[in-house]
Length: 261
Image 1 (tube, rainbow, N blue to C red):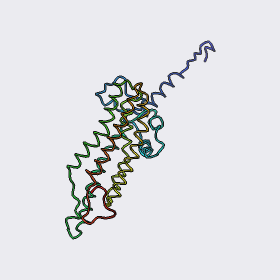
Image 2 (image 1 turned 90 degrees about the horizontal axis):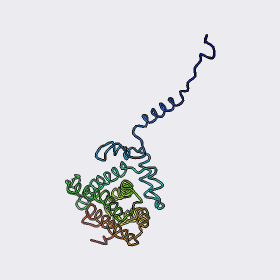
Image 3 (image 1 turned 180 degrees about the vertical axis):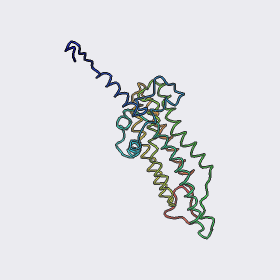
Image 4 (image 1 turned 135 degrees about the horizontal axis):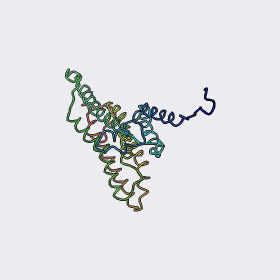
């Protein structure tokens, strides 16, 4: 101060403080980013971390919105700014255990109602062969089909969505089968068929409403016919769910007669 104003030097630290604050903010958010790290290879865990960085509230919202009739803009309305793989993985995994546990419970209920005097009927028995069947069926349809569809569309020159978005749409679209599996424990054949039919319609409409706009962007019009193949495949999967996991009937039928005995 004794040197006077000529001895004073002023320096701005705004740039340094802003950079420090920005780095601290990024550190507090963990690995949140808009996509995979550019420096990480696809064989590393770091590459897939952003796709699993999603909170529970967002996952639940992305699940129940698939049940709404107006879900044709699902990709742009609910999977932005980026799709995730965490929700689809747990949706499909939960469906596998729901099919396995509810099928075993339906079997025990049918056995008990057929012969209430049988003490062994009250014991819940598990057929672990159904578990392996559920794993193969659900993961093949929920993961393999969207990846295969994405490859086919890329070969045909349709690049409107990424493979992650394809898996996300397909995985979240199977959410409806979880409550359907829980309700199919009811030992009334006609009720089970109605529930499976509703699950087929809801999930089928959701997939068609979100996949067909992508197919429609192709220059070749016959590409749109892929939606017919997907509808047939979806119907086959729904029928497999009913026949493989919920075809247990009591000796004395409960409710109206089964249309397909």
